[in-house]
Length: 506
Image 1 (cartoon, rainbow, N blue to C red):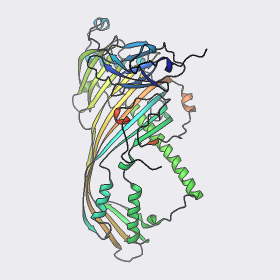
Image 2 (cartoon, one colour; image 1 turned 120 degrees about the vertical axis):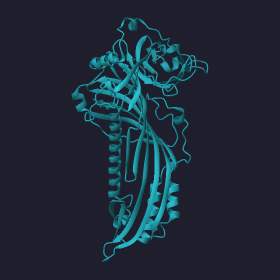
Image 3 (cartoon, rainbow, N blue to C red; image 1 turned 135 degrees about the vertical axis):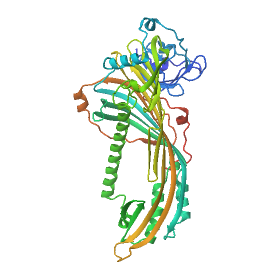
């Protein structure tokens, strides 16, 4: 007799049942006392895990091998762990009870360590506690970009092309969106070590969610600009674009190229080549993003979070004890004494001295730059890193979240000068001279969830070939069906409620 799928077994007859559809388990984890959501809780099923989002929600794909008697294990620092069979979860929310802080046997029997001694033991046990070497990781990466224009001021000092006037430039400024939010998500297999030169990415699926009406219409702007240029500029001219000491040259011939028939073989081949390059660029960009995040884990010596490797540069304090279920944790707060960038907390397993979590936040700008009217201020870098323990007793990355904030300024003169190649003497024909004062701000959030990790041999890494054949599917509105059949990090409310103001035409 064919076994009934677990998705049907778990469906209750009341509307308060555990939410399941398309063999996907969906629920929300709350604090039993405050009823507040519990973010970044670990949810494991047959040793494959997900992490709750900032709203305490998680989504878990249930495959055909899962039985209704298989246990779901849920853990979070500071809470009693939960472990019980799937068929015992009857509600669409799960309550976790705060764990009372008690000095259990491990803490009592241990030496009365100072925070400096605990950090030394963490470093001493790194090779024993963490999985190094080549691995294959099934992971999900979500990036959120929020951009806004702080200021766009300009002044025309001179313009000898009537069409390039304040009316035209005002329309350009108005066409630039004042704020914009962009989401991109990818699922893939990440191969390699922490070495950026020994990493490969096999993309499985990708999406991008944004409002096209809030993006700068570059094609329309370019067409308007080219029309003005063609009416006022000779084909034997060239342009000098200058900003202070810097300049470049653009031939007018480039602006008068003949249009190509879209059905022409050369045009088709060009489009195919462009798509191939876009796929390669997209895959390489995601690989670099993941590589930079992985290389910066605190267990590696070159990490920006160098608390393990240079503890003498920090003020350390043993704040309290906490628990993951019955496992006792030391909680160590760290703040820089002088020049280091970050403060935060380390959660260290009292039994094996492994870091299971780190919270961090910068105490000063990460990077500043101000030269010749161009400025950059990377003022925010804040997040959390969680490690989980596998069946082999080794820890590896389970979740990484970081939010970065930056502000870019541009305050410079700009000159666009038309010169004629065939005129003797004074070659200048037309000129546009502006003074621009603009500033832009952005918040970028990166979230990585590692669902499964397995060690591989270097030969397996070498044998894997990157295909670079995935481009993100554009969505004007959030589509809950896009990720059906895949385990991902549950979307938050902002993503689920995202809608473009103007729907695109297809």
